[in-house]
Image (cartoon, rainbow over all chains, first blue to last red; front, side, top):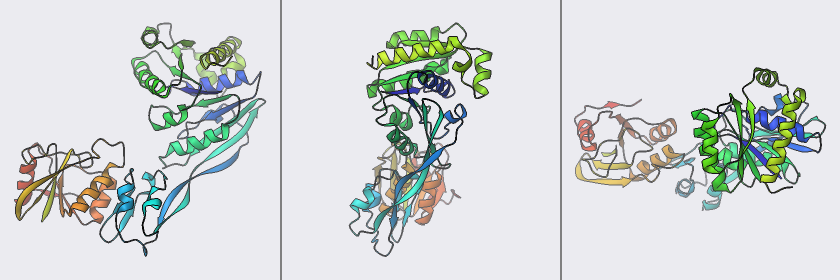
Amino acid sequence: MRLVVASGKGGTGKTLVAANLAAVISLEREVVLADCDVEEPNLHLFFPAGEKTLPVMTDVPVFDSSRCTHCGKCADFCQYGAIVVLKERFMFFPEMCHGCGGCELVCPEGAIILQKRPLGHVAFSRPRPGVILISGVMNEREVMSPHVIRETLNYTSGHPVVICDAPPGTACPLVETLEGADACIFVTEPTPFGRHDLALAAGVAEVLGVPAGVVINRSMGEDEIILDFCRSRNLPVFMTIPFDRGIAETANGGQLVTDGMPELSAQFKELFGKVCYLAGVK
Amino acid sequence: MFVCVTAKGPGPEDLAEERFGRSPYFLFKSTEGGEWEAVPNKFADAAGGVGPRAAQVLIDKGARVLITGNIGGNALAVIQAAGIEIYQYRESGTAGDAFQKFTGGQLKKFA
């Protein structure tokens, strides 16, 4: 079973929920925690430990100028604008290349071969008993985060319980993380911005056919803005986390709230039960 | 000289477009006379990689001059590498107005 913790809006508490959910599950069974927010992975802050890493590579074309006739077939094929062919030369923009390899296939002169280029790495650690942390990390200046996310998810496959901390937003990185998941938890906050981005993210889950529920974070007891929305979209509200200085201080100090606050620990355990039910896993 | 003007519509009476890569149309005309030719920009609504692909259209058409409002970094690199001169038109007139200002020497060279 693979669960995704997502949000749409950034900074709502995805990582807080994913980290504490995993910590609570780990008391009873082994859990894989996957950080798919590869542009800014931060789960390791809650789980400091020695890591082992493996590189993430992508394919990029290398051009043999002596064979190239500037026919333009590669540029015509490239959907990402990474190749431009001029009369006497060509230009290649490596950061726009998605590594699909199509240019190599369509080149009639055999002037293109694919080479590997590093995009980032995946870090593995065992920060506490029962928790395996797998973090995707994309190198600075890179933009092809779905590659790194896919590789990170590949390493989680086959494990019975996987919790993914999703990237914010609703574009390709979220789609890559959410596609094929068994259930999704959207963490939101009771603000117009929270509601707006929750609506967008919930739309992505609907299109992908992933059942979803909501965790309201930083609640001050007046959550109608989110509750109304959830009712209108048939989204269950799984849990409400209060706007509380103790919780903020604990999280900002890199500690898990479920380690020191038994009532929250019980609520996260309940959250896991509700998500399992939503995912159809008993 | 073969000139391209970015435009919101397919004719010289349509408004000039400020953006290059996402311009709805590319209008071509020679300074030596002849008809206007409109090429719809099929990348106008694409998600990304728009600039270089739009630049490829100009290169394939053989344009020597581009008249537009603004242009992004990747497209600029391609346009300059192709030796196409860029002139900036940032007023609210039509594509035809922009073309006339260019032939009248009233437009400033970009970058």
